[in-house]
Length: 314
Image (cartoon, rainbow, N blue to C red; front, top):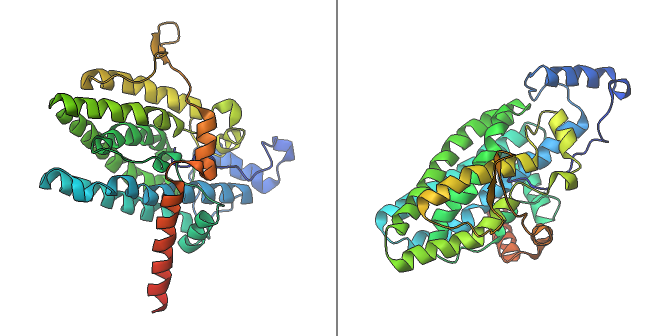
């Protein structure tokens, strides 16, 4: 997801006997499928976990404008330029919806930006990879937005009302972005040999980072259980990653591209595709600030923040 390494600030799953009366009443509402609203009582760990998850999701939408924005001035036609401009504008809007949702928890967007810039918050690892060719615009739409849809559609049913309601509109627009990316790649695959080679090279680069978007494997994600008990998350990282792979394989066949995993095969017994795990050491390095574009992305965000502060005091 766009919030890959969110740590629960709870103290671990509690039994009913270990909960206070307020916590038991809160958990009963969660278990009954009720939405939690801003003025409702909530455990401090629930509130802080949501701030981190929604904040990092918002940061990802804002930083996520940069890789594709790199190609706005170089899009091959006026139509493609207009499409890309509209998509980047959508991503800015998604960030604003999410910052607003987080603000209902008592944190300002300026505070969240400071947390991003000083390292207390992250954004999705996928946006620390460069867009080296125009085919990357289509690949991001197809694979990156496709992975985002798998992860974000369940968040429409998250237990925190403002977050879930924001995600309804975000998911509608992300679904359009995914279709637009697929259409762009299909157009290129019907073109020249050079265009087809460009698409395949782009898919080869983005496949593994796209798999990393769902976060670490479940056995290395100790906070998943608490987030699921609170209804913040609805599915585990591994379940979502499997869903994405199963969804993408037939789409790749239609496009005529090869996913760069020789271990990718259908498992009749499981009813799912077997696939190779991405390089989790690379994932941790990128999350830790050592990706190809980490410094560039944060420097751009820093400049924008400083410009905002200057304009606010002018």
